[in-house]
Length: 468
Ligand code: AMP
Ligand code: ZN
Image (cartoon, rainbow, N blue to C red; front, top):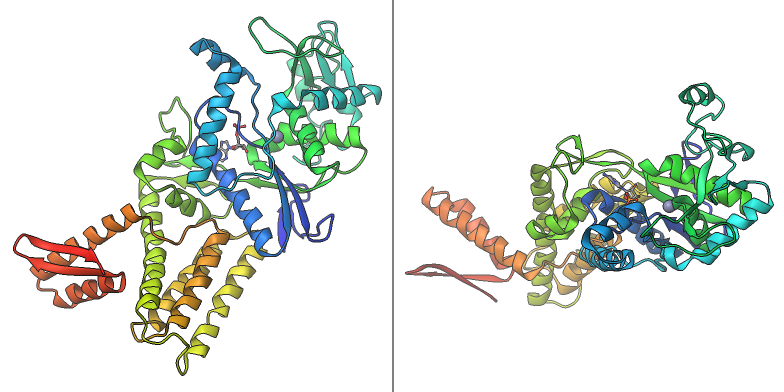
């Protein structure tokens, strides 16, 4: 299996630290509002990475945090006149609901920054003891960036090359030693949550939380660290500096970053008015459509979101689900339980698509091509299975389709209300085809509905239908 590693900018063969196991950390959202569809991208992408590892037989320890102390959370709490904790608890619960609706499985552990302060104080103390951190007079603790030799290795920035430009800005305070130094701990301000620590009453900087939670739940060295590409610099670069200086070993072997999601080819932003929460999209679509839409692109490519593309994704997903429903209907009504003459070859033929699916996923999780492999399997089923087929053949192919969909987190089973909509649409299309005297199409639709287990009745009031 090959993974594109941001650290080396190459696709590398995946070799786990411990045979058969994957330790992976994915930076999670700051919880001050409903998550937006940009936040949903890393959730869906890395949940799929996890599922594929499990499909390949790995045991995955998957950790993803909630940042529950932050300026934005405090601002929102002050606006509503409630505590920061109330805001973060509310939006963690809402986020978990959205994740479930997108079929994103809960992490092995979802640590919260505010529950891990002791570990952060310990790591900051270690960094101070080793000379990688220093305190200034108001109690702020900074990381001494220039002391860490590897600084810039992830984002491929040369800190010295940037020096001139940086100095000219002349923003280094009297006590902060260098512009590149970043905050590990900051003093409290009025109305903010704070914790006691040896330096001052205050709260941690953002970067230290991930270094600490990753160490606590996964160990000093992990296999994969992931997040959106905006996190490469400075967040992940700073995490490396903290963890490697404190622990004395390489932090993460593979760094994976998803590309950004744009809306109508523009950056998503509240001020442009092109900002969607997952909840809003869920009111218009089954969130499986959003998931399928995201997986039809490569995770490292920028992805454009638009109503047209969502409609296309909905139709594609319907095609797969209709094929699944056909197979189930045929299985339920088959005259023969066992494979008939010649059917073993048809059943064995599925391996071509499974092999293609695996090969594409092995190539840096190319879910776009993996979706194509599923479409090819759908076509193969539509061509080779009919009402004369055996139950064993129909179910054998259904189970395969279901397993591949499940690796992508796609639920093959049609949601009931969705099915109703689809049946109504097909009936309408059949009526139109009859009006247009296109009887071939009208018959085709009746057959399609029959295969879905739908019985039509032509009555004086119009066409009625029921499930067989
Ligand atoms: P945040 O709450 O801003 O820290 O973001 C949580 C996760 O969502 C991070 O991994 C971000 O990189 C990712 N993310 C935020 N906006 C987008 C976007 N428009 N497209 C893709 N990923 C995003
Ligand atoms: Zn992080």
